Structures are given as C-alpha cells and as structure tokens.
Image 1 (cartoon, rainbow, N blue to C red):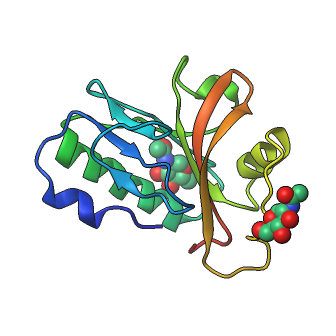
Image 2 (image 1 turned 45 degrees about the vertical axis):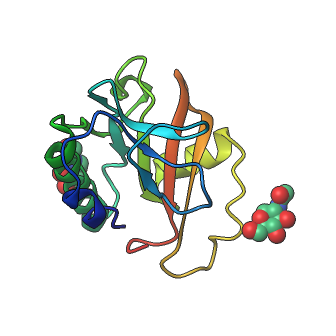
Length: 150
Ligand SMILES: *[C@@H]1O[C@H](CO)[C@@H](O)[C@H](O)[C@H]1NC(C)=O
Ligand SMILES: *[C@@H]1O[C@H](CO)[C@@H](O)[C@H](O)[C@H]1NC(C)=O
C-alpha cells in the first residue's frame, strides 16, 4: 500500500483528506463534501492496524505517518488494535489492514461490507468510509488489502 509520493511535493497544509472519488484512496488537499479528513484543524486522524498484520502493512503505515508529518506538521497516532479501548476516544480513525486479520474480519462483519470483489484477488484493495466499524467508533476510513502486499 503506497500513498506517499504525491504528498511530499506539497508545502505545509492545514487540511488533508481522502477524497470521496472511486475506490482508491485518492488524497486531496482540501476538505470537500463526502471526503474523509486525514488532517483537519491541525489534528491528524489516528491510524489503526492489527498487530498481527504483515510487516509491510506496518511499514506502509510508518511511511504514511512520516509523509503526513512532512506536509502537515502533525503526526497521526499509529495504534496497534487490541480492543475498542485502543482507539483514541472520539476520533474518526483510518483503519488499514489485510482482509484475513482479526480486526478487518470483525469490521467486515460489523459493517456488513461487501468484499466479494477482493476475495481471490491478488494485490488489490478497497477503501471506503464505514459507519460503526468498531464499538464506540462512529466512523472510520477503512482500507482493506486482499493480501499482505495489496
Ligand atoms: C504494531 O505491532 C507490530 C508487530 O509487533 C510492529 O511491527 C509495529 O511497529 C507496531 N506498530 C505500532 C504503531 O506500535
Ligand atoms: C458485492 O460486490 C460484487 C462485486 O464486487 C457484486 O457483484 C455483488 O452484487 C455485490 N453484492 C451485494 C449484496 O451488493
């Protein structure tokens, strides 16, 4: 999963969001209707992963945190999910993971996500805003990879 490169050429920003266009996590430098804020009012959304996910997923998250710091002068908090209490209270997190990890499986069930298009695919992913993905979290931006390199 790579979203980094295009972020690095842009000077300091007040607002960064995932745009609500298509399935790919397209990054926009202004908030718009339906977009999901990565950084809003100088505050970055936390990034949640499953601790059992692959090193490449954890590495991608590390790169993303670094890229956000470079352009927005704020660092998203990266969190390994163990229970709903591990999600910073009141936040709208970005959740990243592989389809077969416990965290992503529970979100697919909780939010009745249709991941038919991902199953059996090699190196693909879906990304979308999800309501109530985890107990106590009202919305999140969820990026699900089909395999550990997707
Ligand atoms: C989460 O756990 C994995 C596996 O132990 C580790 O590699 C990663 O650095 C951890 N990430 C955070 C944000 O603590
Ligand atoms: C789920 O998605 C697949 C293709 O990605 C589609 O063919 C199918 O109709 C969808 N199922 C539901 C219940 O929306």
